[in-house]
Length: 204
Image (tube, rainbow, N blue to C red; front, side):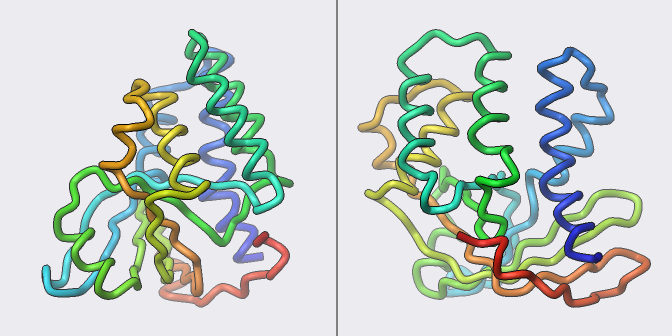
């Protein structure tokens, strides 16, 4: 039950926001709550010191869906889609429960400072999510860095779909992290650090 509660938090909160934006029903509170689910503190340690950085994270598809998803996003980048059509694409490609790999999260590195230094030396991170007043999750993960593969292309393409297409050449300046989740803890007030049992079927 606890893992299902985590999926409700990290997946369905965001999926509902996308649907509400499409339907014109998103409230200010929807946007505030979603921002806390999208931007955890990423904790790393290396020669840059013990560091905590707020970064946006997102889902990626299971392996068998990566190529088709990348093709859909790349095609969309070349067309002048409306914001709602972009959201519909997001809903179809990245918020389909059957497609998502729930044991991987992605992030794009825009700053190349403390987190970048630490994760290249010590590819382990903790992601801390907190939604007031009492919901919190801690994810411990191994990190892989991607600079010229399908993960790198996909995450950069998703970023640019909503923030403006920079051109593929500019992507060389923005590596991608994939967080391979190894442990999840429910740090909410009523759980106080309860470790979740994670079904292997949620990864692909």
